[in-house]
Image (cartoon, rainbow, N blue to C red; front, side, top):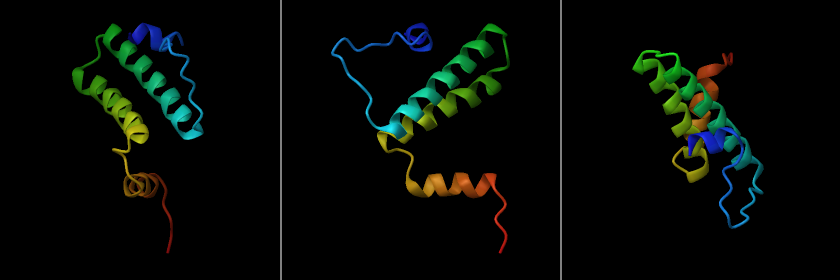
Length: 85
């Protein structure tokens, strides 16, 4: 299944189309993260490094399912940017 997703051939068979731009972006990020997982496994990277990419996949899937909340998004933004007082 991973190969189908990475090659863009993961059709559901029922003609499902992603119309939500946020979901589409999250699915693109999942595909990118899965590719990184595959590369890490192929290159025999340590499991903890591969786990980081797996967690990233789960994060982006959580964006779609609602597991990642607005507060989680704000925490992410503030952790990446220094916003002065």
